[in-house]
Length: 568
Image 1 (cartoon, helix red, strand yellow):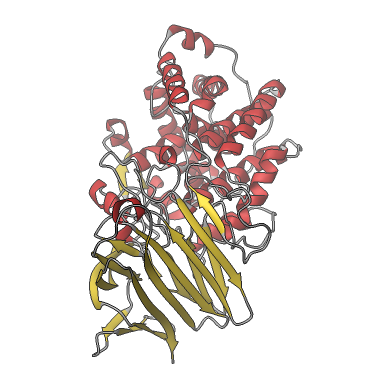
Image 2 (spheres, one colour; image 1 turned 120 degrees about the vertical axis):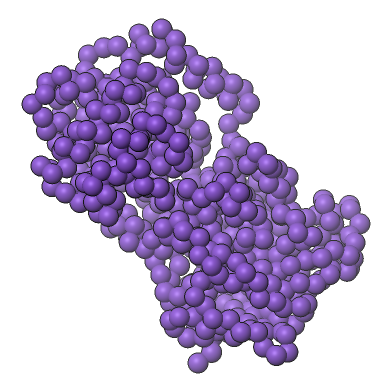
């Protein structure tokens, strides 16, 4: 998504148009080529490519700037691997049957970071030794997915080299040889396979592994140059000019910052500056990540991701020296953030990601989240790894977000196979930040072809953050003749908020567990309090409530004014 040529200029008050598909995903021809290359991994020719010398030792051991999870590390010391809501005993890892998110944690060796956070080198080494031997026996000689997936090899190289003192603290020469030989084979695999990773974060991760191998293996100058050329291409396709990932998922934005920080650590240990593309991507990604946080410091929930905790976000930002504040007006990435007093408002003001990039993407256009200090008020239901498939699909719907739903239909279609279909192709947006209030008006076309209505949302947050005034309109548009259609306006509330409807049926009093109360008012439709849920930072569904305004839209359209006001 990029700004329409000629639509607005540098004036923040000008109307801008953001369109889906401006940066499309991998073409059918490219997918076919990638598939053929993956099939070639099983051939004798590819096995020959993987042969060669292995480094007797690494040139340096880079520091991992991202702290691990000590609780997960302590579970490893007790013989269990805990990730994505699952806990698997070591002897059961070879049997599989766990979620893709857990498999990625195990296969990437990200658990080394957690192990190091919970134990010293002497205590951690026997645990890492046993798990490494198990992985080598199952995967080192057999090129297959997911173990040899390019993005997993990219992460594996970064983790194996950063935690080499733990992995290689042994007198067993054969084991040490096996580890270093697997590392070399993985690097050779990536030399030709990195570009087969899906466009976006996965491909950037694969090329990061190539660079790390080039910098840390003897005689790696050519590989480093190859890797830097590859990551330059990958970043150009993965990141918008404002620094936001094309997936539009804040949790992936956090993962990008962590990845680039770890890669920068490899450059630093070799006393080399990062490539221009890496340095620029990191500098741009950091303020965009900071702008995805609410008042509690944790991430806002969008595009299949939950509210990654404030501690993890703060650790990622603290691990780097890049300072750029926040980028609250990230037009290409698509989220608009407003900070007034202690109130934070984040609005999805763009179409969903391109269909080819939309794994886990949501029909969330024009939804918002609102917080008062550290207290979340209005939220989206969220998402996360390890959730049951049916629940995960439901969390991607428009109704799982704080926005308008027309005829119980998603603003962008969600197909049974997980892909996104037709719907929002264009969002028009105007933003202004004034002395008295900050305002945004945005409109999307997701319902135009199906129902003949455009959805327009206006939001105004006072400068002191004490009041949010909103208005949702359905405006007849397009060739299809509009007809009377039911609508529902959803405001999902954070868990723990005591909510009481007013006797006139037009408002509600919200009493959070901490902080001041808020009052909701509307002047249209029937207001009800419905059951909802929210996925917390640990990926657990929590019971919550939602305010829902419902009415039938006449063929001439409808206007629904509403407001949230802080009360003493």
